[in-house]
Image (cartoon, rainbow, N blue to C red; front, side, top):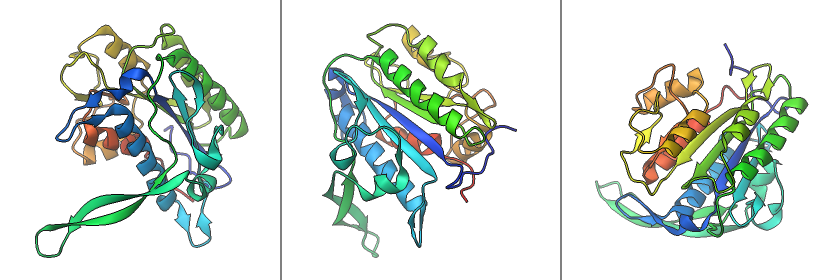
Length: 278
């Protein structure tokens, strides 16, 4: 069965996040307290980087089970890291953990022990800031990711394959992205082909759809294109999705359409579930 390779410091895996930074990311995303799409996506990725750092922390520090790239595409295509990691692509997780651009103070409601909630201040490390400017050059972004995937699978031919997660709110402005997506998944390690997942927040409306197994019910052809580009969820990710209340089948794909804020976070969590760490 593929996608079962142990992940270790000597045989790590990698995540490549592709973040739509086009002008339309200034639009609001749904939910009880609407926020700009760019803000929601940036917060979700910053939170995930913190959680990965904690997950991989041992007594001697954060272990480099993963290398992580955050690539923005809008007016330009390239690293979306801020601060000391600016202009870097795949960065070992220990370096990510040690180099947030800054640490903000955020308010958070926590249980007060008496059945109520009390507001407290928490630290929130920030590696990428929200950006919204320019078009949606998804082809260029996917080709950028393919270069990283090709280099990674050559370097670690027996490891857990790279995972590319594309977060976008609009149609590609530089042509049909299907061929570039196929090229990413044409690279493989001995454990399976590289994985490409897509989160689509569209202005077309339509029913929110999470981890579907067919394009039926999607509101337009472009949502169908992104679904078709998305890899099937590996077995262990399907199991986790099911444990979180998602309906899954062997045909379930790593695709979410018009997610609310909670679904954005859950999508990233499920999409980054890997196998045992050593």
